[in-house]
Image 1 (cartoon, rainbow, N blue to C red):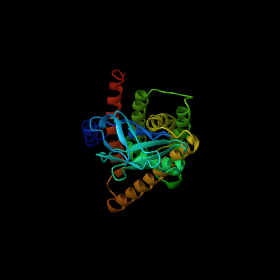
Image 2: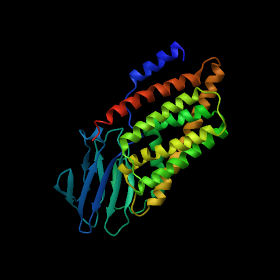
Image 3: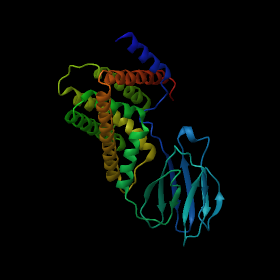
Length: 310
């Protein structure tokens, strides 16, 4: 490593910000509406949003009988209407689970630009909801983004990228399912530390030009088994609909795969464009140092935090 590269890596380690594994952590809202019109509401927020909880506007005809955190209201059972959330942070999403008497449970996603939850709507497609959730998960987890970017930089050709990402998805889908059905469980903090370390190893591999054709997909397969437990932690916060566990789980995985392929395509196009405009710029090497420097900082931070995590 040249002195300039060492300097760059050190600077990245110093400025790297903390990031948890797959840091997509939505809030969870559970709404129960009984046949007699009794409405019960519970909300669970990510730690960074607990000091600024959102407010709720009850449907017309509802009378508040108990405030948050375990909100209750008496509503007109003939016309429950819609629940509106105000003061919802722009970066916060709520996965709302609605259980209405004599209707199947359903789930939907609420955000600042879509803050209204209908209490009368009964038809929801959990597949589409969790497909969107899988796509959004790609954008919410910095270290997962870094890993996919690293795999794309390492494999270079379209065939290798597709093979490697497919192996990665197959592996993390397996461990995600095992964790979801409580067949295998690993504690979150050590998993997050190992995920950060896997990005360090990947960054080092990008700098190694000599590799066999099977090396990238085997590496992605092994790391995917680990990353699946990171996905499980995020999905556990959201929950799965009781009446559609398998379709929702499959949709989430498909959404993740589509997001990975889209990200890989964007990175490949950008790298090709930069190579054409600035052929002497060692872009892959610079990006490898950037990924490795930030991931090294995450690894150190997470390992040091292991002794303090309850």
